[in-house]
Amino acid sequence: MHFLFPIFNGLATSIIFFLVYLSDKIYQMKEFKLREGAEYIELNNLLQQLGWVGTGGEAKIRIKQEEIKVNGAVELRVRKKMRVGDSVQFQNEEGKVI
Image 1 (tube, helix red, strand yellow):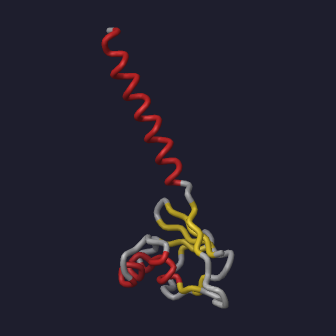
Image 2 (spheres, helix red, strand yellow; image 1 turned 120 degrees about the vertical axis):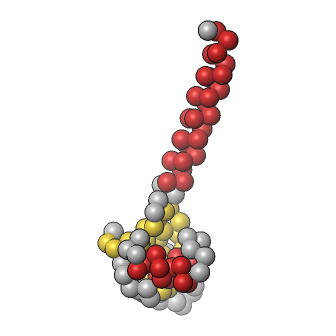
Image 3 (tube, helix red, strand yellow; image 1 turned 30 degrees about the vertical axis):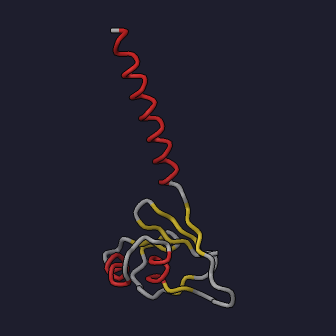
């Protein structure tokens, strides 16, 4: 059975590195900085800027399907004005307007 130890040891190491990688991705918060002088960004545009959706149409669908939370609550307004301090959650991603 000693011949199996290197295989299991390598596998265990790989699993540990993978879990560390996942934990970093799960809890990573993206920040979006408003342009100087801008008071807000619309939610659908924010989702695109964060790279979570490819198009405005996809953003609208995700919002209407109640997949987006703003400040912890489901948001259904596609053009909700996101201001400094607002947070947004989608799947395992979180973002904040700064």
